Length: 262
Length: 283
Image 1 (cartoon, chains in turn red, cyan):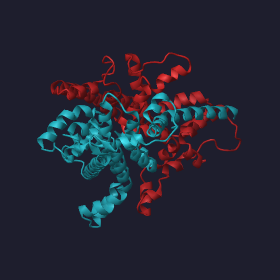
Image 2: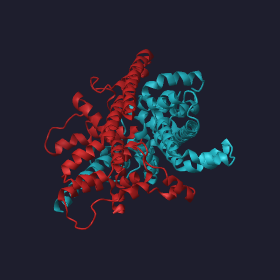
Image 3: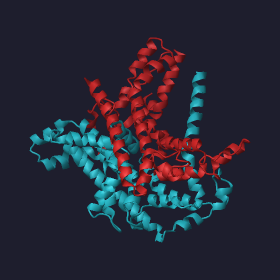
Image 4: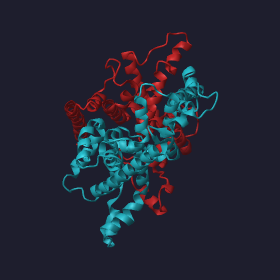
């Protein structure tokens, strides 16, 4: 059972959720994976000296910040594909997608295959913005997935057991246990994606150069273009303005953390 | 049970589709680098080349008057240099934070790493530029300015820093206390107790740092006086700003840029993904 959970970490949770709906298919078998063992399973081979592994086993994952090395790795074993765009240089992804969405590119041919007019993705302001949003999503979705996965691993499985005993169905289990338990990941991902939006410049620089008609002139790219034109005053003004925004966001987040810990 | 299997089948279908969207651009890029420009234009959706040609690679053998090896060498110098600076400084800095939390300004340093993780690094170009020029690190063939700029929190040091900090937070202090009672010096504490325990985090941080700094192009483009210090990624951006884009050439250069990263990542994916998850969750 443990092995199975390790192999398909993300799925196991979902499958369990499905199983609750079914109720009592398996007679004697305990429907819950023994996850506690999994959390303790720290790979010994990671250590230069074997006895240190024992030592490390003593470190308890106390909160979300402490991510145990084993389970996450196991869970994403088959999902590394989603992470490749995040790890490869951002220029590469942008360059390739640019070719796809170009006037002669693959994405223009796709509508033609089903008999529609080809779309000029990059020369129409609305679609150009959509294309950039898509490319950014494509690039960063791996990080967000990993953060959710990490959070998944840290959900206390006994809560599912309790819900199952109380007779909750799959949807109720998801709504009242999984979603609230994922709240930290939701918050973190929301913060990250807002920040990521503020940081966006590579796609704008490579794919659209801020056009058409300034439709994709993001804040960071705007500052960058000012810098390229040697307009240092404006660029610094934008930088200062953004610094205040980020500080405010960070301040509110830290303030809330302090409040929660009280 | 029937519902179970059905749902799983749908879930797997969706996952396979998503994986395909994720990986398709890279496959396209790889196969297009072996096509002629004409074939890429005529049949933009297909993957497998009708005829394997090497014109793309022949075209990138010499870029802007320099051989491709020049840019590969620059990429290696810049990313290895950045990795060294980042990992050494964050490892030792994190250790210092761990050993004595009450040293002045350490709280501010920690917060500033968090700010730098959130702050758009593009906007720091002007201050960095001014600093690099004033330190006389700006010039032909001067890698040091670029390496130092790429090592700042905004570009790459924040994630390794949080990795180390998190690791040291979870390391029991009794370990060092026991060694101190046994009469170990401060240096010995670090080399004989901390370093062996920290080895896994150290490799993870090194990998992440290398992977992120390999693709950095903005500081390279902005802090280079001329092409003598351009790396591969900067060259790819440069290639792209020209009006007429040579498709097979771009695809070939993209392949060259991403191949080392993908290979390193595939060999070490667990470490990298765990590390990035841990570092970003903390930050």
